[in-house]
Length: 165
Image (cartoon, rainbow, N blue to C red; front, side, top):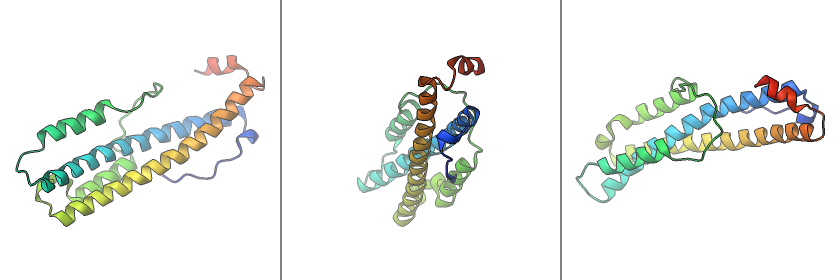
């Protein structure tokens, strides 16, 4: 996702502020999903690399349980928002292609160079998602600050906000 230049929040109407903020939150849901999946897959690939470096013939079953538990239950609490299946989002499709092309489905048969290449590709994707989220949060913070200022200064009526939700 490409982040376009944001207009000055002080020059936007209240409905434009709310609409853009909602749009950015929706986009963040997709970016966050892709980032979490990338982090989990990166952990699995790193687990395989660690297993190899320990020269162990054991299966990474316990490591897999740990990785999955961490990614399925961990993370900071977020305000509740409706959830949707984002597995067909272009970012998720892109990550699936990176993993498929890199051999994630058959980690044990990859040679060390292939494993390193897969690790680098997933890490680059995750890094891009993290940067995207930071930029999006900056935009969301600016919009939220302007909304708060308008409510605080009486330029916007809280009753209209409650009536919309």
